[in-house]
Length: 411
Image 1 (cartoon, rainbow, N blue to C red):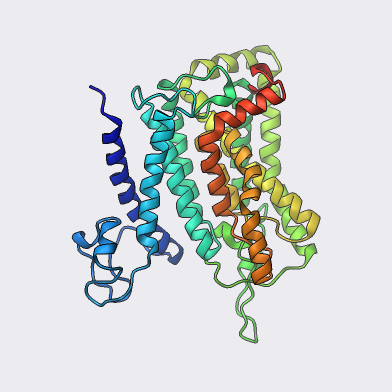
Image 2 (image 1 turned 120 degrees about the vertical axis):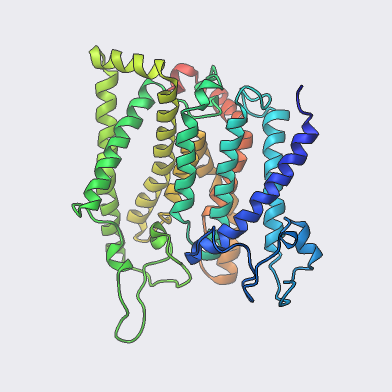
C-alpha cells in the first residue's frame, strides 16, 4: 500500500528539523576545530548540558524564549531558523521531485528513486553548512565538500541499477558517463592522483604555502594571506590579511596551473587512446556500457572534474589578468562536490547563475563597507538549489534554442 504524501511530508519535516539541529552543531564547532560528536549539546556560556526536552528542534527555542534554563544566557535566533529552513528544504525537494515531477525519471519514491532524494538532500545540507560557515568566517571547510563527494561516489555506483538513463543524456537525474566522458574521467583521475603524489613529495609546491606559514613579525604584527587564499586549508578567516603584490599572485597561480597539468594531460591522452578505434577502444566501449556501476562512478568523477574545473579555471584566469585573487580556492571543492552528486551540467549552469544572485549583495557591500569582497559560497549554493529544481527546464530551453540533439550533447 503506497504511503500518502501527507505522511511523507510530516515525516520529512520532522527529520529535516532534526538534521537542522545537527547542522547548527556543525556550523558552530567545525570552524573552531571542535569535535562535532563530543561533548553533547550544551550552553556555550555556562557549559551546562542541554536536556533532551530543551533540545527539541524549533519548538524548544520558543518555549525557553531563547534563553538557557540554567544561566539565562541567550541563544541565537539562528538556531530555530536553520532548523526550520532545513525542514522546509526536505519537504520542498520531495514535493518538487515526486509530486511536481520537475526532474525526468522521478515520479515517486519507489524502485530505489529515494536514493536520488537522499543523495540530493546530502548535497543541500552540505551547501547549507558551507554557506553558513562561509558567511560568518569567510572559509569553506574542505571536510564538508569531501563528505558530499564521498557520498556521491558511493551512491553513483548504486543509482544506475534503479534509475534508467534518460533518452536525452543531459536530463539524467544522476551522473551517467558515456564512452567519452568515462575516458576523460578516468584519465583525469589518474592525473589528479599523480599531482597529489608530486605535491606530497614536494616536487610541486602548494600555492600560497609561503604566506600561510609566516610567523609573527618583529613588530608583533601577524602576516596573513587573504582569507580566500587560506580557505584551502580550512583555517579561520577572521583576520583579514594584507594584499599581496600582483607579481606574487600571478606566480602562485602558475603553481596551480602546474598542479592541474597532469589532470588535463591524463584526460586528453586517455580519451584519445580509448576512443580512437582499435582493440583498446572496443574493449573500453564494452566495459563502460556493460558495467552500470562503473558508468555511474565515472559519471560522478567527470562531474567532479568539471564542477571544480570551471571554478578553478575562472580563479586562475581572473587572478592572472588582474593580479589579485579572483575567487577563493574553497569554492573549487564546493562546486566539485555539486558536480559529483548531480553530474557535470548542474555546476556549470549554477556557476554562471550565481553572479546574478550575488550582484545586489555585492553592490550593498561596495556602498556601505567600501569593499568588493563577498563570501561567494552562499550564492553558489543558492544557484545550485535553483538549478536542481529547474534543471530540466533550463536544459530543454538550451537544447531547443541551439537545436542540439543527443548526438551533439551526449558526450
